[in-house]
Length: 173
Image (cartoon, rainbow, N blue to C red; front, top):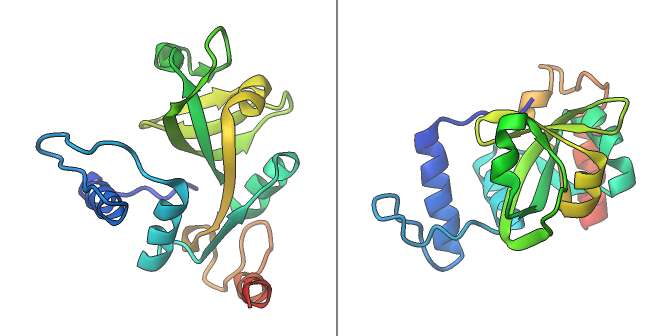
């Protein structure tokens, strides 16, 4: 399940992260609304205690990571025409090429037999086709979130948070 954060918190976090990157966003004027670096956002979330750990996932393991961790953050370069596709509920690569200036992060939480991935973005769910996944996804980051864990520290997929975090510490040492 994606972490749902009240808008004032998101605004504060966006201001904090953009400030750490050198130019704080001003919500009153819209100045410095340049987005954030994907890793800076994840590090900030970890610092706040919203996530325990994060790591890169290869494209071939995306479905496994969604099942195991409840979802995967996808960093994408959106084509210029993708806002026009919002009403359809499906994002596909039609005519436009990915635009590196249109960076966006979504939360992938499900998939189907056809290889489509369901994502949460801009307050709605969208379906990303396999062609879109291959063409515009730049980064795949799995997060270990307390929201995905039962009180005993295990997830619905049966992984154990304590064991996983111990392994992460061994690798990071």
